[in-house]
Image 1 (cartoon, rainbow, N blue to C red):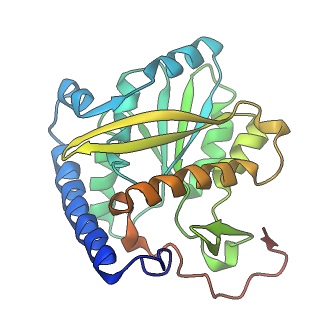
Image 2: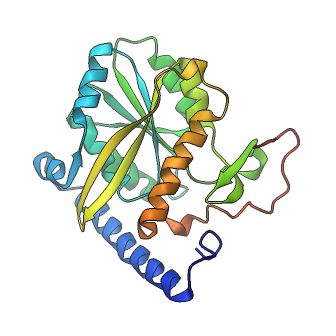
Length: 250
């Protein structure tokens, strides 16, 4: 935290850190609660402020891609699946421990979402475009790629770091409208989310503009309420690493 908030005092950093650990405990309990909570109760606890936006998109019969982040409640966002005609498809990195991986998979598929590993994402999503279904793909794009795959570097919270490009690549290649699911914590166990438009003309956007637009929105959220970001994933660990040959530095 000190790295991205050099202007804050030790007392301020300590307050943020305490809030983060409290929120992380809440999220752990919420994951367990996901196993048994009813659809009705979940919709009370995780509200979509502009659900009409998704209903408007349904009428266009176009698949969409949703940039997500490890902020507030990303685990409960799958409740969107029971409120629209979109088939929600969550992309996630497979966990080494098969038992914990199954638990996470089951929780994220709890409300009817499909869950696809990053390894299979490109193939599955490309194949979906030839079917009659209506799909909404969710990708959390704020963590660090492996340094060998770090081909795009840009500023995030004032630090130059490698950034996942999968969501932008898919959006531009398949011409998917791109949105950011902006989730805010209202109080313990209650959240409100909004679908924020990044672009509705992906194929004509400049390279890297989608991911940069996404990061700017996320940065503001973190600055406003930093305790709700997942600081434990060490987002800035590669900042001093050697860039791979051919990488774009923006």
